[in-house]
Image (cartoon, rainbow, N blue to C red; front, top):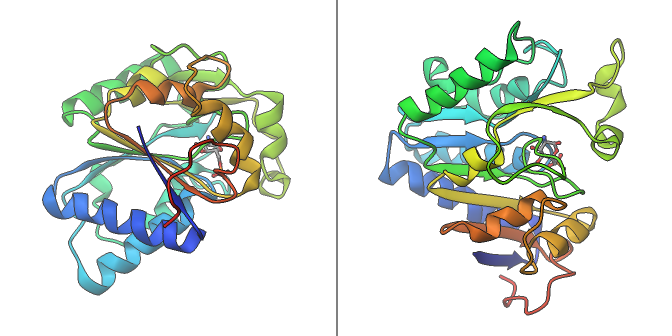
Amino acid sequence: MKLEVFKTANELYNYVADLVVGRIKSKPDLVLGLAAGATPGPLYKKMAEIHRHRGPSFSKIKTFNLDEYVGIDKRHNASFYRFTKEFLFEKTDISPNYSHSLNGQASDFAIECRDYEDQIQKAGGIDLQILGIGQNGHIGFNEPGSPKSSRTRVIELSKETRSKIPKELFTNQNIPEKGVTVGVGTILEAKEIILIAVGEAKSLAIENCFSGVESATWPASYLQSHHNVHIFCNLQAAKGLKNLPVPR
Ligand code: GLP
């Protein structure tokens, strides 16, 4: 596990955006796993800026969204598909034919989840998975208690996760009770993983997930056994960790 700490979030995002675009340069048909949420937003914005100003083309990459709320339409304000569309797909030349997402309104989630796993396999597996982290240590919607071997599935959202969902996004609808997410086992099969954490609210999760112990109570802690994982934090998010590297 490689941990990098940055003095500011802006420096972190510049660094990670260059890294991800560099991966696309070296492998134009990169298979990229995309988290949604406040954390990856600035990364996608910077990736789109780099793409616009100096290339490369993203037209051959394949993307797989990490998760979605169950019961909401793709066009809904809170949809993770809509988020990646607005931040990345519409701002770059990513092909709609190559951007995959889980359907929160699937009529049969067993089929939806199995098909998604098949599509990932058919694409050759995820080359690079981008992750944020929940304050309870979840990755995607893999809530505490998720097994390390879990695959893409529907999951009950915890009280804590539901309390963090911005209520203004759900004016005409209740806050979702379930999510559909790529599993921990599926995430761990990615060839490379980048997890980003910014802000003090994430510091407890970072401390519990990356201090050496692996447990289902803090699902991101499973990442510690992955052979190629980079954790990028700003100083506030990393404040609970011992033996911090010199901040960039
Ligand atoms: C959501 C998503 C996760 C995301 C997490 C943190 O629950 N399912 O994929 O990483 O929240 O979100 P944020 O980056 O907005 O803090």
